[in-house]
Image (tube, rainbow, N blue to C red; front, side, top):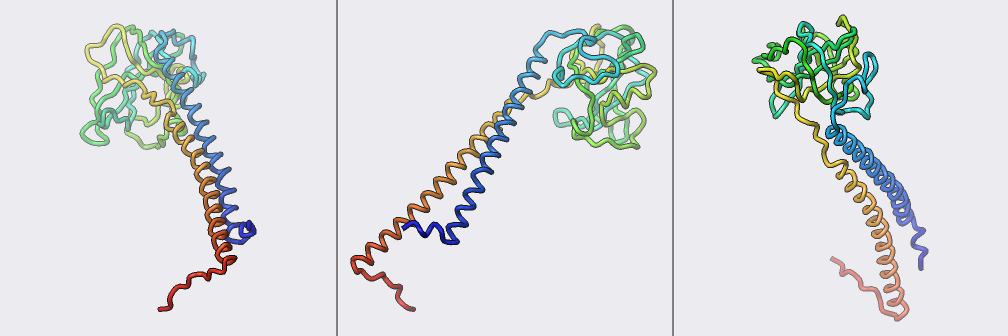
Length: 266
């Protein structure tokens, strides 16, 4: 009765099912892994944002990359702005508008400094027109902000290119920018959230990062892939049972001597 399962048509179906099941298992496990990774990242970023600020020197130093676990950690640092080496960072939209980040080195003393993203300004009238940037405060200031690792093409998705107008960059890369400065830079930058004394005018603040749902979609996709396993196996069993039922019915008719219904000729 079950010999039909060894026919070429059914053997092909068995192979498809046996290939689909491990594929769906792998895809489900991959999505669950992404869920755990994104959830851990979301929790870490949230904790860093909500934690009390600490002195910058506790987490970063000149020439040393910022640790991934310290990303968005709130820090404080004091110094004087080096407006002569200020840069603007191209292609930084905010609230649906094209614009730039304003990147000003803060000299902290001892031959060191840190890049400070003072905020966002709208783009000029043309792509090559310099934006209007509020002047950096003079004198000693204390900056509070979110610590960020240097940007690279890999971690930002932004492709760097030469030939930009003077004073403009595409990536906030402390290592590259520091090559043209007379002091050493911390291997990352600070995204300003507060400054003392408060300036009369300043760029628009950069919004807090969107922590998101912490990988909730990945969890849903993982469950979905594993449900597909049940659907594949259930459909396979259903087809076998239906074929078996049809064969039993046909065999019963043949045993009772009932001729098979014929389709009338046209």
